[in-house]
Length: 183
Image (cartoon, rainbow, N blue to C red; front, side, top):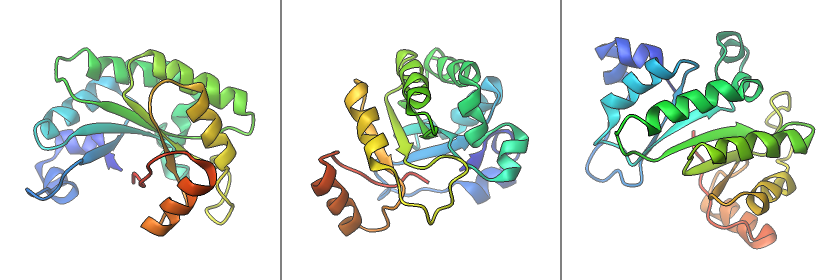
């Protein structure tokens, strides 16, 4: 997760937060922001070096919530809509995704995800924990599967996948498809 505001403002931040090489393929950069203009300026720096841009709507850390980024955005779907719309309407022609967490009330999760889908997202990564759950809590795979079955765009399962074996087990058990962590 790269902070868009600092990335757009500082060459030092860009040099320390983002590097790539020819063997990086299917590379997606994840930004944290709550401002569509700052986010677009950050995205402009990575276009041509990445295959897509992800907006972090799932980080549960206290500092991120205080900044109004990460999982805080799950309570602000209009801000997310504005950020995605700004990138999609910019003419940059780059895939855009979001990473979300689930709500205790899965209807709220589906409502958020459907709204996000309707604004032209290319896919959504669903972390199968609420923002208050610790990483030791098991991922709610049924919630991820519900999102997959309820939306038309691809869903990427996020959480508790630390190896290819973990991904294969998840795929076999729940027939969710292909996974990989987006950090």
